[in-house]
Length: 152
Image (cartoon, rainbow, N blue to C red; front, side, top):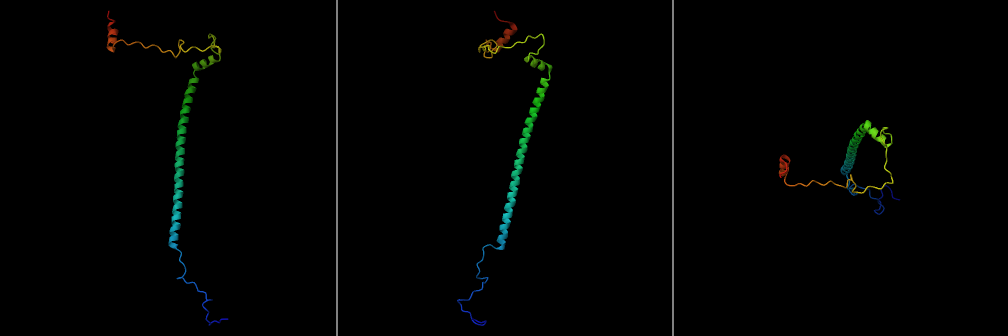
């Protein structure tokens, strides 16, 4: 309908896009590069923080292991000391008496399980405390009495 040279009516004409009329994006290549660089930096900081956390955890575990090893060393020393004690003939003889395996001169005895318990004030009981000797006078008087005897 229209030829090459014919004019196109303005209603049907399509405007060619121009760089001046196109909307500009607020993100330029420079801003995009800064954004990517910031994200990479944040990633490095995160990786570093995780490594620091793992190192702190490993140091804490090492301290716990050292403390556990020290406790085990104390236990081993205690058990070695106990082993030296139970190897002594006196200890073996004492334990043998508990199984009625003492010497032939010993008379084995046991306390009757039906026996009544001792009263709290029985002789030899821990509840009885010996009376403290009464202090008469000063320490100087005590020395004079000890050196020269009592005055009549």
